[in-house]
View 1: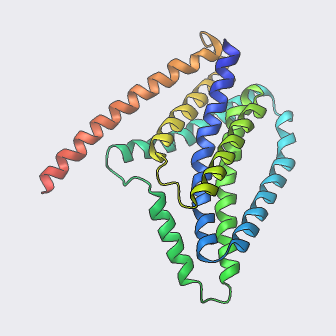
View 2: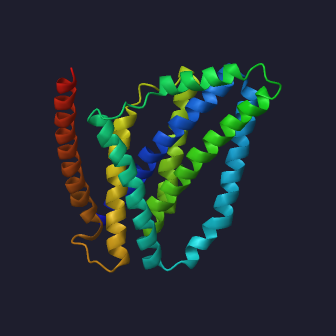
Length: 250
């Protein structure tokens, strides 16, 4: 039961986190392909994937040289910071303090920028660079998510499986719809991923300092639950505060 819980939570966290990042990269690639041409979009994407593969090949074997408790503590700490960053933004968006992320708006902004550059002699190069940067930046975050969710307990393979499934799903949907995936509830996904990554981080920091968690991996469930309760309370309180100030401003 413990193994199934650990595997399931690892795959789910890697899949959801990677899905959000891949959707954002896909939006930029689509904008480049539609506005300029698919050649620079594919070249930029290919080069970025090659750089990511090189980074994994170079730094991947180094993980085996790090003591497991040290790796759990360091990755757990980074995971808490990474997860809380997503959770903070999701809470502020859900409570109305900042606008919800809209892939259609992001697509429109990117295509508008590319169209303004279309008369430039370097247009293809700039378009390819945009695709390269998008895939590289979002890809680095996917690699981090895979390492963070899988390295602590030797489940890199399962985390990679979740990330690969997210990439394939976005690619399949994109091939069929040929437009930004604006219907994806990105803020809800980021909310869940922020909770999952923060829960993993707390669990692994505890493992790294020698904490004996009741129920071992099953402790992830109550940790997730406690974080979720406090997050929903925060959303409710901030929403009431935001609404009351909005009424006073009228």
